[in-house]
Image 1 (cartoon, rainbow, N blue to C red):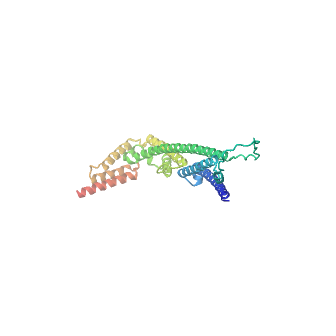
Image 2 (image 1 turned 135 degrees about the horizontal axis):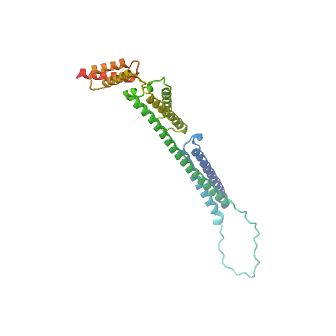
Image 3 (image 1 turned 90 degrees about the horizontal axis):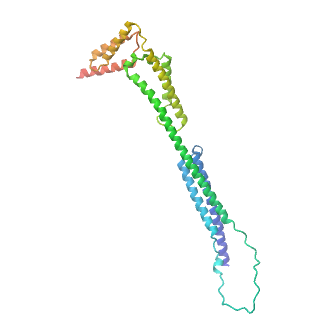
Length: 314
């Protein structure tokens, strides 16, 4: 009775263990599939590549361990307690009186146990899926790295165009004498100048502080930078060609006097009174001939105030 109970308990344990191993295998495969979804479609699954790889790795370990344990259990079946203990003792050899006919075992053949093949198939399936996911993950990560490099290169090219335009315009604004060479760049009634100012503002509106994550934003910035550069070259070239449009000899002489007076107003070695007188001369002579931008007057006035303050405190 005890032997039958032990055999039944052992069989039940084997069945439970088999179900547990199958469950672990299925859970591992599902984890690998779920992790691959997070790797390949992070935006839709709400996860990241690192998290997806961790889930794939954990699922692979669980599936492989479960399949290996199941295969070992199927190939090496346990010996029942009854078979291990109820071994008949050896009898002393006896000499039969007469030959006996051979005994034919009429018991039916046991059914074929397909469990090892099933576990081997599951192992092959798990390893194949793991190989596929590893290959796809490596390819996906390589594509993402290449896409990031291309995105960085596109952003760098667009930023180079932006810097070219911004630096050229800054040089014009910082040079007070550029008004005598290309004054139309301060004339907003000139269509080319107005077009450049609009394009320059649009470029600054879409300019990101650093490389964005989406190629659409990089493309928008690159397109705006190209438009601004085209508009700048058109406006700057036209302004240089037209110049001050001073044709008479008297006006040309007046322009030279304005230039000389502006040089004196910007001369740090001159006194505050001399610089103020020169600035008044610029304002008086420029009327009707050239429009001096307010930024030049403001810079000169600040410089004159600084010079006067130093003279009073020295």
